[in-house]
Image (cartoon, rainbow, N blue to C red; front, side, top):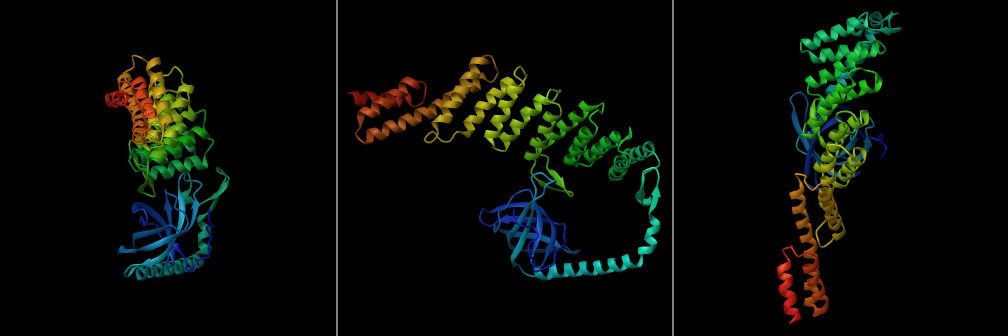
Length: 423
């Protein structure tokens, strides 16, 4: 990755607004979020990696009146955000700004300068009185601000959080449950506060944060009695992402959900591989990869399920899915006959081991389709030799179709061609 702290010609200021990015060469467009801006460019958070010097068009709104600004830029640097999974912070250097965009950015920055100056003056004036807001608390063994201090006991703090939760004031409940976990991490109420955080995030539609809260509960308090219930909650959240629920970042649904579904289902398997949801979660990992068109990864996921749960309820289905993934991985019949042959073998193995399965007829149909591919390859070779006057070689390949693929759509034509060449 390029150095994040590049030499900048212009100072950057905080700017947390949605930004529309369009790749100029590919004509692809997606939404993301800015983190700061200056006259020379802006920084963004992105779920997609863009190489240095990639040229993009940018469009956003700035200021209290939401004036639109737009222009073109190039990627100056990229840095992976270690705490946010598949997330990158990127610096975009403006190449050209349209209309009054530069003026609006300059006005926005000038307002920030005034805010900063006033803040520094106020901080200087009020330094001494502020000390009165902090006091030592023997219960927690630290200095705290009474405004943000916890209740005197973990029981009181938990009850305070529950009051807000029952009143459906979930943001306030999150604040109070967070205090409980932070100030009383070893109390019997701490795991209750942690699960309370997860429930609040679910109510707020912050499903990925809910998953993270439940995962922290399992990792920090492994002896929590309702372990299976927490994993069940994670599995349900994984299903939401599998079905298309977008992950929120700072209130904006801008990230794709497929990768998050894989992450969550993997944790379900890791947390309780032989629990009530272990096998189903592993199957869903394969299904997620199929949705993402990562057929090699999907095939590995189904193969792992067969190894991990040889007598499981989804073992038969996984064998069938493995063969389907092999078909998806294969290219056209002209270029990849090996993958086609492997898929035929896997479908035949499936029929041999699971003759009464409900997917048997579909497997037979797939075999016919794949054999048609192989017959097409032989037919094309035979036609080539025939066009070159090499009738002996052409007859070999026409005969191969009749011998190996008699049920293919090319068999009748191959028979006619062979009879003409023989006579």
